[in-house]
Image 1 (cartoon, rainbow, N blue to C red):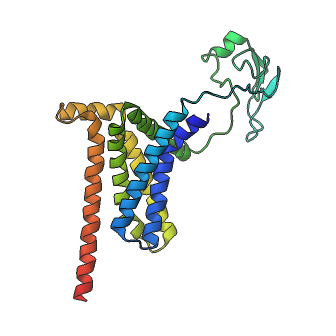
Image 2 (image 1 turned 60 degrees about the vertical axis):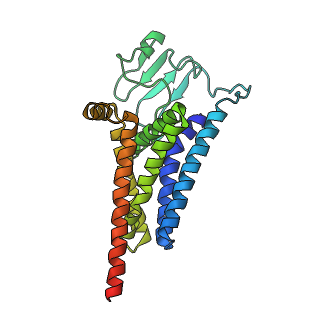
Length: 261
């Protein structure tokens, strides 16, 4: 469970670290080229180091300890957030979550499901484990996109360090090129909020580009002119270079205006 949580949080740490780093450098007016270089190196180093650590951690044998199950036969599962929702009684206890059970649905008589009926999802769509209240769709979509991004990074790491470094480097380059977003407002909190929205859009764009449909579209459009694994990094690098060019032109325009004044 700890390894799974670490894999899931890989993209969250990458996006969050760059977001906070860029916000700090812009707020404290750190020299932009040096700050961007440091953030790129630290972001790639952190992502690569954590990936190597997780890969080595999986080879460590698990501890020989047995977990004690809470509860026994007749365990009642209910939602504390919605007291009037459905209640499930596990007749065989938590050791057999797919075993026989009794369903207490508000406004309906008690329903008994045998072991085979409980496993048949066509009878009633119920989870075999405890259930809770639903989170907002914005948070669920964010968690899904972060998980897909982390799975993609881990897949590239398993394919080799060069594909992983190519994709992660292009992503970090794109994220660091958006430093001008944090200069739109004189209020640091508002700038951080704009940066969060921009990074959320980049995360959604990353998920969209890595979807099977878009990968097939890229493959059919390019027709082997460019390896399909380099298409998304090339897009990230192109957009990042345009953003850097925009920041450089804005800097030159401000300097020229200061000289004229």
